[in-house]
Amino acid sequence: MTAGSANHRLLKPLLRAVIEIAFIIFLFYANLLMGEFTVSNGKGKTLAYAFNDILTRANFVIALISAFVGYVVFEHLRKKL
Image (cartoon, rainbow, N blue to C red; front, side, top):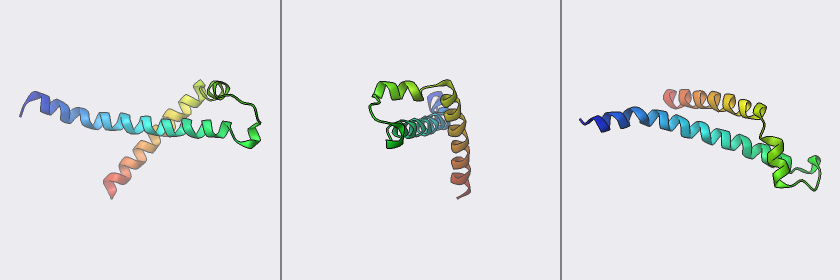
């Protein structure tokens, strides 16, 4: 067994977690962006205005917490099933 193989095996779960958490964050922001363009939010909004409205520190913290909780829940379900 080579050192590169052992190193790759250790990094694989970490890389998988980062990818899954990033995907959950992407879905969170996609949902927020779609919500910016509903009929109830008014007409005439630009994409730049919508991004400015959703890219806040509070939304990022919510996205990180949600992504971490989602990752833990799905990992638990994946191992249980």
